[in-house]
Image (cartoon, rainbow, N blue to C red; front, top):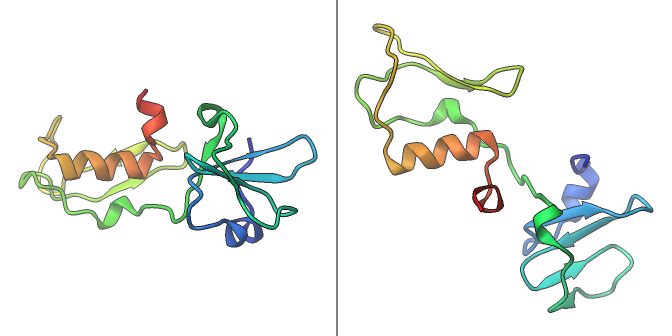
Length: 120
């Protein structure tokens, strides 16, 4: 499924967490209990499509390079490479592992675009 365009992202309601594209190329926005598309005046309550098949809305990409990791041995930059892989480096010496705290794990998940549905 394609990503939302800038225009579609601007139309996205604040309550929306997921979307999908229907057969007419219209975007249908959803949350746990609401559903809406452009031709509706108001969101439909207590009606959703199968959210497990829908794509999470990426409001703003998470910049992993700004995250300060908790492991003091880790001083390098982290980034997502052209293949979409997370690259973590160390500046003083090469490390093969590091300890990740819960905030570190959350930052890594955000950088990779992991959602709650991915963990089910």
